[in-house]
Image 1 (cartoon, helix red, strand yellow):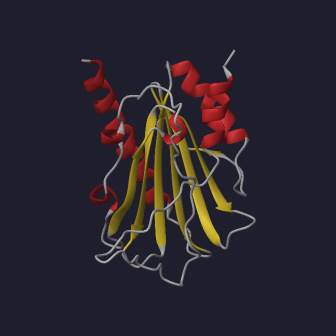
Image 2 (tube, helix red, strand yellow):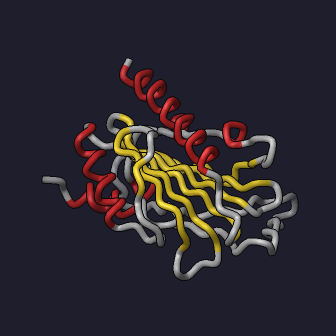
Length: 204
């Protein structure tokens, strides 16, 4: 039976990850383009009685260069370790026009079975309209395309596991401008490979 921490970590995957606007010289922050509602996400907090530091898995995440293609150039807005204190990492990217965003979150579990159970929990508690569909990315890969009831934008979620890692890739774009399936699959497979290599290196 999974502990409460496993379900809490799975529930974390259904919350939109927060965007930290980049700070310009002089303390000013750049405003997002009006063509797309502001991207929102949960922040990572640390209390005075925080648990001992966990491993830093940020190097397992994709980079802005991995996401950039002929149609969009992405930049990184944030890259944080241990989302809500759980082993793993999360990164937030937007394109130069602020019309698309990608949130890459990886959570690390004690073993493959725990990660698979957390994946099922995350899928069952999704907060995006649309039905889960199987996809050939990772183990138990699922893609969900739709919108959030309270947000005027298109959302595509890709969830899968790679060993003890649970991956949640969220693609946000303007309503009616859904991220293409080939792009979602390509990014998912890149993250799968990055985990396969990175987790093996960590075990050595």
